[in-house]
Image (cartoon, rainbow, N blue to C red; front, side):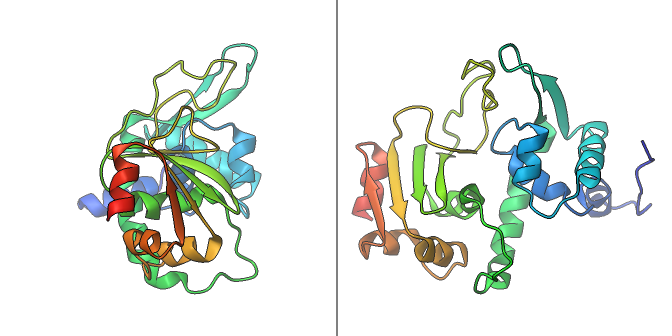
Length: 223
C-alpha cells in the first residue's frame, strides 16, 4: 500500500483533505452511508470508477479508520465494507457539500447516471421530525431514517443481509412499516434536489403524495 499523500499543512481542513480529498472517496462514503456494501455493489453504483481505483480507495479508507471490511455469516459468506463511526461522521460534510452544490446541478445531462438513493441527502435536509420514511421514485425505492430514528442493530436482517447495521438511509423498501411514504416523480425530485421547490409546497401542490399514519406523515400533510 502506497503511503498517504499529504498537504503537509498544520490546518484541520488540510488534514481532512489528506484523508477524503482524493477523487471518489466521498462518493464511496455516500454509498456506505446506506449500510454495508459488497465490492461489486459499490462498483455498480459508482459508474465511471475503475476497479483498481475503487480497490485503492477502499484500502486507503481502511487504513485511515474510515471504513472496515468484514465477512458476512453463512449463507451470505461474502465480504462487505462498512463505515466506522468516524466515517459516519462525514454525513454532515456530504450534506453541506450537497447543499452548496445545488446551484451546480442544472438540468440532467444525457451522460448523467442516476440512482434512486442519491436523492436521499436532499430529502434528509428537507424532512423535519423523526421517523422511518419510504420514498418511491420512478428510478426505484429507498428509505430514510429522519431525525436520528433508529436504523437497525448489528445482526439485524439475517440471511447474510448487507443492510445489517444502521445508516441514515438505505436502498430498497423500508425494513418495517414506515411512519410515512412519499411518492413523487423525477421532475419533482429533481426540483427538490436543486432547491427550487420546498417539500411542503410540493405536498400542498399534489406533486408529492404522502401516506401513512405516523406523526411525520401527518405533519407533512398539514404543513
